[in-house]
Length: 373
Image (cartoon, rainbow, N blue to C red; front, top):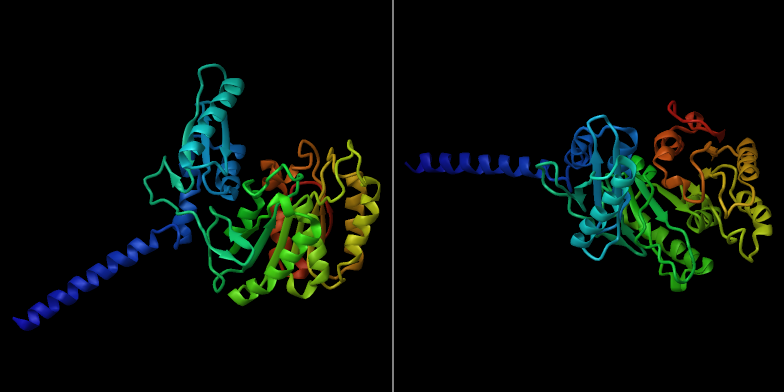
């Protein structure tokens, strides 16, 4: 009898362990397959157009906490989508995206068409799957991107540090979403951290000091490789720090790098081209890898074509992979990296520049889609 009880308890223990392992494997915070199934085309139903798919499966994941994604789809394949980010709470996010998406749907699809909320933070309302709990980890001045999967320092390929732009003391960019191209890197095994700064003290020297202070902490946490990425002033300061500490940085991704103000306002824009030339010259030939994206009709860039040419020239003298991305219209403007078409067409080049062996990484100027890497 005693042996039968022992066997029964052992069988029950094994059964419970199996259930526990199965539940763990289905947890989107610990199982990448479960995470990716949440942020997949399955959540969109019949809306399979490239804009909606890219917007939900990649761009939405760059949102900060209290975000929501809305979608309206017609049987003929047309759809309208929008997401909001950084709202006071999830209820406010749902309300905000419903109003904004309904307005877009009525304008683009016709009166009477409205949206439904597909996701609120990591709860995907069209799928019967466990929710993804927003990530709250922090390392020094960096905080984890809330809706990106966290592989962990020991398992990740490395970490991408995202630096937002600077819009003056009255413009707080800490709740703005990171671009969809970072989700491609997240899918490839990279963790994504945000370097968010209070606009009241976001002067360039202060921001550089924060970045400089944080890099050793990422190494101490166990990350093997570090990629610095940013848009506008965030991209400019990423290149500056990579030049200061090239041995600490695997790659730098600068999207519409700028630090001189807008052409239509009194500023020092006349010095921007020469300063950009010096910025590139500060990077040693052997590393880190570099990708710079410039865009037509960027009011903060005095001559995008000239900047692309400077990067292309640098590529001829640097042994480290060096790439200029200068997409053709309709991708344009200072926020061109946030265009879903940039993610779909040129994101693969960014991924390949970071991931590929040096000899296989793209170099020079690329204007057309990077389907071949």
